[in-house]
Structures are given as structure tokens and as C-alpha cells.
Image 1 (spheres, rainbow, N blue to C red):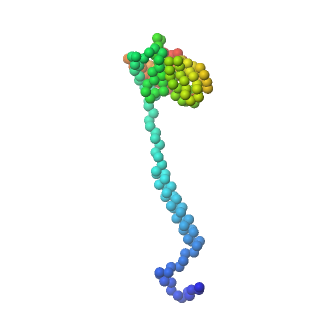
Image 2: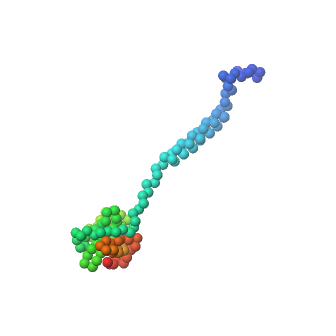
Image 3: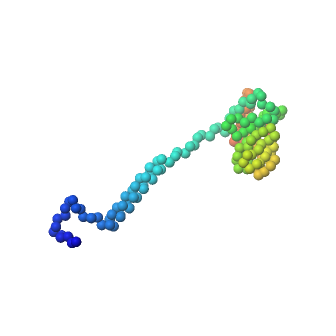
Amino acid sequence: MTTNPSEKQSRFDPEPMPRRDFLGLAALGSMAAAFILSIFGMLKLPKAAVSASPAKKFSVALPDTLVEGEPFVPPGRNVAVFRDGEGVFAISTICTHLGCIVKAGTTGFECPCHGSGFEKDGTVRKGPAPKPLPWLKVSKSGSTYTVDEETTVKTGTKI
Ligand code: FES
């Protein structure tokens, strides 16, 4: 059907949009929608659940009932504190293999992850742990002790 150029276009019958323009407009609209949705998606990302780590230096009051050679693990700490006839000392309970928390007992330490075993003084009894458990610095103030998890001392250091 041919249209007569002199024929006036009705406003209720607009000129059809060429296919190329329509597709270009559709692509532009899709990109805008994707951009806006991605912004909303980023805003809804969960916030990092970072909590402040506890101080690495902490005070510990050893229970009066603590038996000589028995470990005392302060709640929330990766340290075992011992008292024996020579003094008080602390050993880290972080496995030297891959960092699991070892279980402290009266016969030593056992790692639940890969089976490493440590003697009561932290030396390796059974691998794969490559190194002994480190001894940590302990200081005394009155009847309380302060353990510094960031400072290691020579094995056998007691106060
Ligand atoms: S982390 Fe302890 S043995 Fe592997």
C-alpha cells in the first residue's frame, strides 16, 4: 500500500518505528535496567561481620582448685595455663600444623584436625605438626597473671 505524501498523518496513527531504532531502544533500556538492578544488588550485599578481636593480653585468675599439671583454658582464649611446683606458664593451643585448636589434657595436647599430638610441654609427639606449641609470656600482678598471646618465650620459662 502506498501512501500519498500529501495525505496528512493522523495523530492516532503514528508513523511506525523502524525495526533498527526499536531494537536499539530496547537494548538501551535493557542496559539501563541491568545497571539499576546491579546497583540495588550491591546495596543489598551483606555487610562484613567483622568483630573486634579480643585483646591479645589478658588477665587470668587461676582457680584455687587447679590441680598441679592440669591445664586451665580461660574461656574464649586459645591458651592453656598451667601451675606446677616451679611456677605458672602458658602454652598456645593453636596447632602449628594448620592452626586448629588443640585439646589440652593432663597428658598433653591432641589436635582434632589431622591427629598431631604434643607433650605437656608442647613438644611434638606425633606429626604432622612441624613445630612445638609456643610458650607465651606470663607476668604476675598480685594474685592475677597476665598472658600475652603475642609474645612467645623460651620453652620452660615459668614465673
Ligand atoms: S591442624 Fe593440627 S594436625 Fe593439622
